[in-house]
Length: 466
Image (cartoon, rainbow, N blue to C red; front, side, top):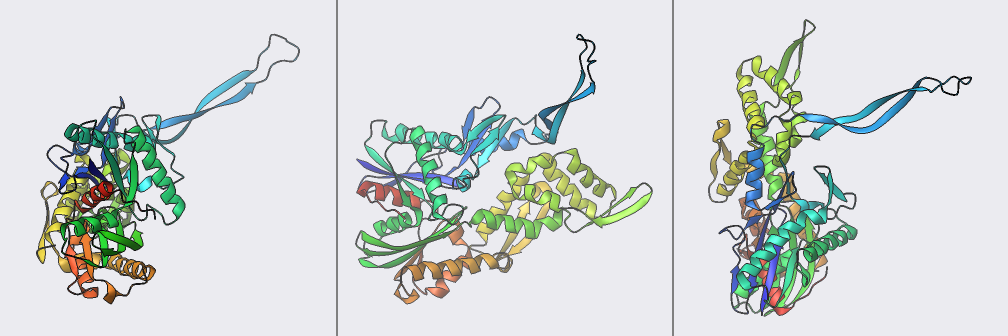
C-alpha cells in the first residue's frame, strides 16, 4: 500500500507517493515533476495538458491578426405595408433585419487555453464558459488535467494499486466565505470522480507542508509550528501543535495572493513606462491638432494577463499604436516595443523574464530584467521589489497576526516557522518572518513539500476538515 498526494495548484501541479519510508515525486510532465496546471482545447475540442498546452497556445497566436465579428443575437421584424381588409388574398409586407451584438467573437481562434481555473471554482456566478460555441462547466475544464495525473500515476504504480488519494486544498479559495469553499470542493470532487479518482480526501495545503517537514526532521519531538505556504496563486498558513507525528491543528488562515500577482505588479511598475504608458498621443482630426495622454488603460488588463494578450492584435488597438509610432521621437521606440509585443504575442516571454529576475533577487541585491525580444534590459533591485510589494507585505503581517490570534498563541510561543512555496523565497518575506520569529525560521522544499505531505497524510489516513 502507498499513500498518494496530489497538489493541484493554481499555477502548477505535483504528485508524490509514500510507502511508509520514502517520499517519491512523480515525473508528471515529461521528465519534470512540476506540471503547469493548463488545458488547451482546439476547435475539434481535442485536449492538450501541461507545458505542451502552454506552448501550443503561444505558437498558434504568434503573428495572428485578430478580427472580432459581431454575434447574431436576434431578428427584428417590422410591418412595412398592411394587408387590405377588402382583399382576402392581400398580405402584409414584413421587413426582417438581423440584430447583432458587440463584435466579440474571434472566428479565427485556433484554440483556447485555460490556466488558473482553480481561482474560479468557488465562484457560484460562473457556471459555464463558452468554448467555440460549446458551453463547458468548470468541472469539465479541470477533468482532463486530473485524467492526465491519474494516467501518470497508473503508468508508474499500476492500475490495480491499492491507494487513497489526498488532494490539497487552500485554506481559502477565491473569496472569503464558507459557501465558496464548499462549492469549490464540490466541483473538485466531481471532476476527480470523472477522472477516475474515486477514493479522495481533501487536506489543507499548509498542514501538508508541516507534515512533510516533521517527517524529514524526526529529531523534533514536540512544539508549535507556524507554516507559511506562499505559492503562485495563494498564501496559506497554519499553526500546528505536534508531539512526534501526532498533532493538533490550532488554526488556519489564507489570502488569495501569490507570486503571479507580484509578477503583474513588476510588469505594471517597471515595464509599462517602457511600452508607452504616460506618453502623449498627437494626431490631426479634421485639420485640428489633438493632444492627450495615450489611453494605455485600454491595453493594461490584456497585457497583465498573458493568456489574453493576443486579443490586442486588432486594428482597433494597433492603429492607435501605429499612430504613435508615426509621430516619431523617443516615444516611438516605446510604442514599437508595444506593437512587437502585441503582434508576436510576447507577453508570456515577458513574464518569464520577470520570474527569472525575481528569483535571482533571492540571492543577489540587484540583477538585470532582460527581455531580448523587446530590446529591454533594465536593473531591478531588492529595494525596488520591496517597494512594489509594500502593500502585500502589510497584508502578510496582518494574516500572521490573525492566525496566531485564532490559535491563542503568542509569537514567542512558536517553536518553529516553516516557509514553503516559491514566493516564500523572496527576501522581503524571509526578512519579515525572521524579524518576527528570530532564529526559528526554516525553508522546506518550496515546490514539493505540499505534495509530499499529502502523500504522508494519505498513507496514515489522516483526515482534517476546516
